[in-house]
Image 1: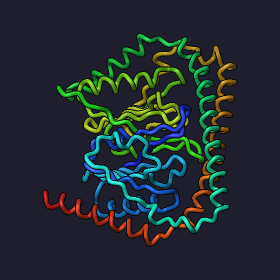
Image 2: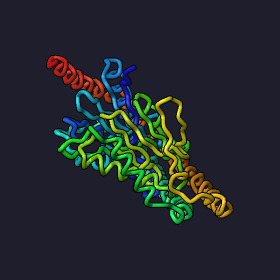
Image 3: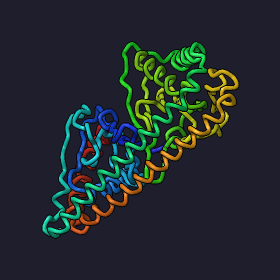
Image 4: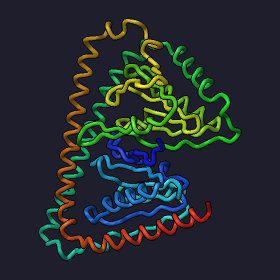
Length: 369
């Protein structure tokens, strides 16, 4: 079965604040439509409708989900057309994406400012302040959780055989890349496969890897070299001219959680909580970094300390998630004011104009075939 949709995040709520990967995710497109205007003016609904329409026509659609509401879309890429559509409120860095043309479509035209009472504007401004504080609290709490996570990693780093870890990387580079090298280096595409959301950790690992021939599930504890291994593999792939998609950790974007090599039909990923999966196909493999690189008995020797750290870490992650729940509730209150003051017939006209432009591009592509 040919998969006609791929799902990602390019915006994350992380221990380093709001983190955006749209510059890389949308790099090299021929055209990007940026939908501007306040929340509640129909942008996400239009993006979803366009995605559904294009999928019905048999085109491949890359969907970029909202970390605040993962069932909603912040953007899409129409793969065959090399065209992107994205909500201008979330696509930080998009002007640096290397797109051939960026077109702004103002959904603010559908918003009637006069329908919001003066006292409502005061309320909206107060809510915006509350929203900013909720996000700030979430990011600060995620940062605290990351510092606790660093304590956790320390026990394993101190007991790691780095020569064995280096050998695993060298062996994988030889095994995966032999026969696929090119004289022209590549540039990796950077994405998130998951995000911290008000509903907790959310990921698309299963759908992103379902059609690949080979999947390597990396197991191991915090600090057992999983991210470092992936960084070495990603760097070597770029040097050897092998296409690679680099997936950053939605909690700590300085760490990596997965690589996908489209040309060699392979994925290798950190398969531990909160995105823990197990092989379910004959071709699936496990790479256990704990048993291969960490001194035996490390878990047992530090069981009490690690249990305490794990409890503190889990508590902080739950607290951070509670702030995201708060942010979603506040954002919904703000959004309701704009929805009430939006003329959705105007939003629909913009939708149809955009659909018409896409249909023309589709027709031109079909004529070239």
